[in-house]
Amino acid sequence: MILNMNKKIKARERRHRRIRKKIFGTPDLPRLNVFKSNTNIYAQIIDDLARRTMVSASSLDKGLAKDIKTGGNIDAAKKVGQLLARRALEANITKVVFDRGGYIYHGKIKALAESARETGLVF
Image 1 (cartoon, rainbow, N blue to C red):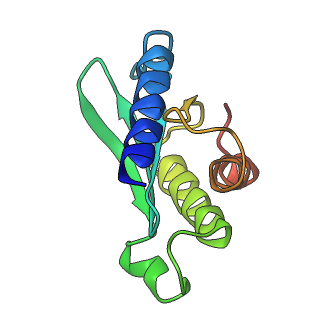
Image 2: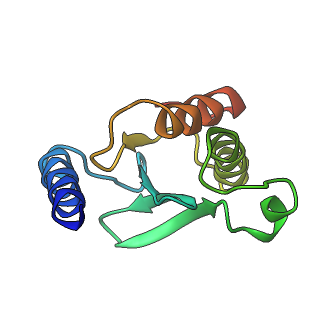
């Protein structure tokens, strides 16, 4: 079982490296990066030129911890996407490039992306 999971993780990391060759965040068009674990989901908006995180949100944030029972489900991903988009709009970030982190655009990743779009981010 552990060997199988290790293969899955390595395959996702290979896909992510392949995607990152094409996707690059700038100050004008930063990169929205997503990482998920079994228990939580994390999202960051990154300026790759300055190598700094401009905005971040996760299911562990204090504001969301009250509303979320489990941090690793689709409902939590939607709330993280909304929080990230609100924080980005406060920081005058309206357009981003979406970096799905090597994950399939389905389930939690799709829920996060669509809720961020609905809240006002463009990508």
